[in-house]
Image 1 (cartoon, rainbow, N blue to C red):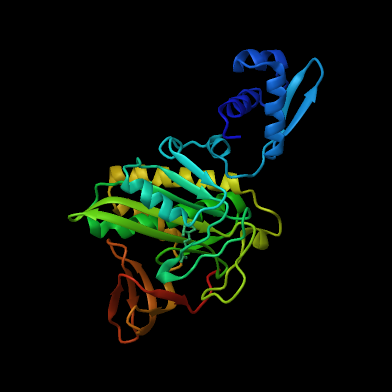
Image 2: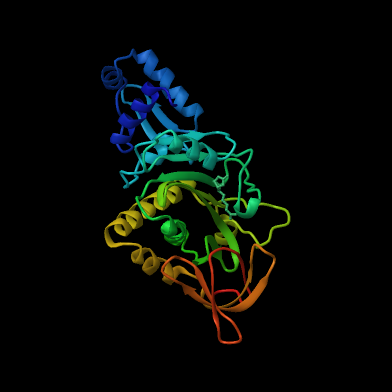
Length: 328
Ligand code: BTN
């Protein structure tokens, strides 16, 4: 389907929004024979498209697969920034690695890499990210804000807000954010975000934000935070493409506004989605310390504020948070 003719054929069928387009018209528009049109229709069917063919009437598009194909992702995407450069793999090591590699070679802001499966999917704190092929969303995008280095964590918060909003919009589930960047529904993790960055002096050169969403399958096996899939929670299969498009559109909107209005805007948007407002938490730090207290939101750099029993407030720039009380 990556063949240009099949892609163009698909566009033509889509323009008809479900109405017939004659074989003659298609062959004229594509500059190929009617037999070739028929062959490309078969190719599309093999890729999961349902196309009706009727003598004299031609072809019409009945349905599209919920597959991570550039043409499918682009169709209906409002964002212009994320649509231009889009790569989809059936399998890759890690979409973050691919995106980092592309970014290092000058890929523009808004470049998106998606995959149906990863052989070396990575999570935070050197954990692996497991995902059933073709069931979930695994993707990364490149941002190039000329922001000071210390504002980089805000971009991860921005991505988390975009995911939480998209999950709410597409499924109606009450998604919230566990600092810094897990998206939870009723205490179970449905999505994780891994941001990686290259800096030049004290400015961000590029940042890759990798997002894994358990759409139709949750990873089995021992996990720190209980995991769930969106379909498990809603009790029905969840379409991946509209969710992916929505996340990209949300990132696009939030990012454009953040660039115009400054980082404080990110926090304004993040705050109402956060599970960190007054929740009882335990924070495990990188040096093995465990601190318990009440989460009091984040400061202007995105650091977590925790009020200790003594009344003192501590800031955390990194760490693993456990919510002692499940959010609604
Ligand atoms: C976490 O919760 O620990 C973060 C998980 C991030 C997983 C995503 S899947 C797409 C991208 N590629 C990776 O290798 N990791 C991120």
